[in-house]
Image (cartoon, helix red, strand yellow):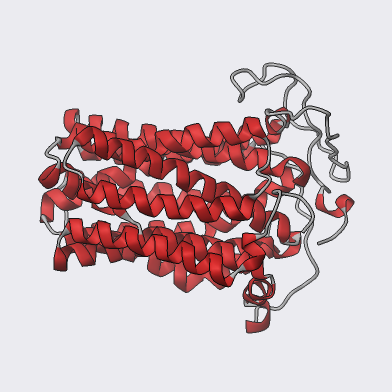
Length: 450
């Protein structure tokens, strides 16, 4: 994996001023441009819950990523609502996930290789800019009540952008935050992500109700552009790796690494299949409209409830420090995710549905923190692009392909059957993984030696 000097080369020195509200500090301007400076963070006697925020580059990354995800979540709510309103078809909702997943699958190897060879900050900025262009076209198409086919084309472009911004964003973070506090950064990062996924759908529901869908797409484009601007303010000296030919051996190096590192493979497969089968959120428009009868405002609340639980979970983990029995914890969390999905599926009582989605969000956040920390700390820096691309594919499989699976089953057998059987499948995945992966079951402290 390389020694500490190689891992931390090119990172910025931590800012010792206390960040206001955990995000912004008014002391000191900019980052120090010292490409060969070593970033060292001493391990204090007491756990520092705000260690990551003392690094200026991370604060810019955090704020920009929060705004970026906020825009994408608003767009996700708008697309789901517009698609179901215009077509009234669960199958059309399923295709929303599929057309975004296809380019991720097709480009996974190329995107990982590009991320490892070229400047990761520039790759990330280019990819998010492409997402902004797709949002602008969605806005125009929606305002003109254009063809559904053009909506799918824009989502395909968004999926293409995602194929590149997911690995570049993940691989960028360990170069601006030292691995000694990486778990802390991931906990805050997931909390910010969930704040966006809670607020985004809520804002989306309000805007759908009061202004209409096109306004949401325009705001999404502006928020994505804000992330690109903040990324440009991060000092990120790129050190070109040794020349690597673009051939099958290089493209699939990440695959070989994952299959060689059994605990990484187990945690990625657990997350992928667990969330794929338990993809209840893809059917939220149907639950809000036809089952719970809560309308657009209730739709926004349903989408926000998992994020509320995830925020509580993420903040708690950041203050408690790295999990001591991470392997056992993620297995229990995925099983509880499945159980909450089952109860949500059969519920007809709106407060109970919200409570189950809250629990679902708590469990999902635990899974995300464990998987993200374990994968990044176990992977050498020169492999992080390709491994992150595969990890992004697994996430895309669990989300976009999971949405397709849930929508297809709902179209054939009904939404309740789809959600309940998906929850049962998630519990089965957790049990099977626990049985066949002792390395994950015995995995201890995040960031520790194993």
